[in-house]
Image (cartoon, rainbow, N blue to C red; front, side):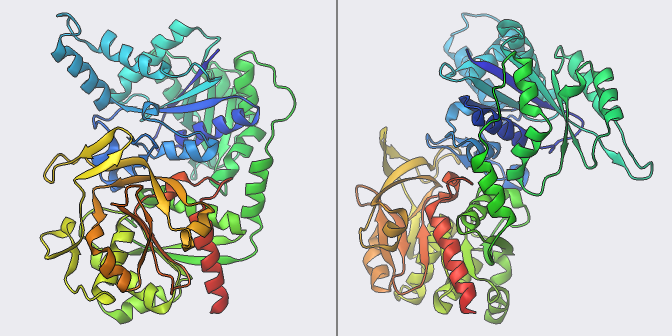
Length: 544
């Protein structure tokens, strides 16, 4: 029997509902239950694919090619369960589906309304593909009281009535602010938030209270009395030193025990936290540290590179070292070589991540040149690989005018838009001037590695599958020229048409990949490329 846990947020945004959902799923998983997490996003965009990273953080891509919310990255990293298209839905996609049905005449002339048509579509989404699961955790984006989230709140109210209380649970994440002038925590915002939720027909069963100071028993009892929940169901949630400490912290506060009690399930002994204990031990007791410079475009917002940040942390865990990430704005490098050297010389390794558009591209190319000439470990991801190929073309292959068609017309399109590629569904085609949304190479694709290459030794295999998100590819017609300049195309698509990986054999560690390996890294299973990259940075630090 599948049980549903609905997670809402109140008082303020950014309380960590996604992290809470991921942590609770990990706790249930540690007890042997099968879990899956879903995210309902109230905004009207069909998906976050065309949204600015500064608006929404990174776009997380699943194996089946869905552009989803960054919270799905948390879900995968904490549970190891690969997310799917069906695990994230927006108001835009719900309404798009309904309007398509209405245009086809599927509703037989009926008046199409929020209730029942929109709420029914939301409930169908929540219940789809759940037959083999013990728990489905559904996170509702936004804050209770927002106009745009009302259809989702109404849908879960109906779903609770349909499935019954023995199969559903409501968890409300709220804020208990500390007023410094008064020197005390205030429970009133939580009371008001719960009242708002109950006015919409949902009585929460459990409250997770985010607070900066320990929650006194008196205040805990007060919240319980005014919000109509058991005192044990008021769970304090203080800030943790690391996100990977959160599951253990929530367990210590009784979160998973209270969830099981609410469902009438008996908790047999202690769950298996061995892998989480190992992660915390590695993080708390590093045997060294490295500094990695990330030369990117969206460095003003850490969430724009959330998966990358975590993958570097995982690489540190694999090597038992602390990874210090120095975020460097690529535009700052479009100046003098002295300034580039000043910024990059302290770095033990350099990484150029993905991105879109021309802004900062010359700075990224300058960073590649510095890493190549100074023999500093270099990792280029997606656009970073393209910049490595343009730098190689200009400075080692004699293709002086090398550029990307993404940046405008060029006589030497070392990087260009790809119009045809092979997928599981067959030949996929794209028009150069087509819509932005959904026109990229998205999701997991296979690649074949050269058996004698550096990447093959890192992966321990010649066949890999990695996730992509890009419109532009390195032009295979420049392969010979680039290889004469020292770059080796060590990974290609199975048909040999699309370059997937480049490396420099004459360099200690120089690898560029067209895909996004950070999306498949886990704290308990670091991605081999990041583990190897951090190890190379560690070796570099010992040379200085």
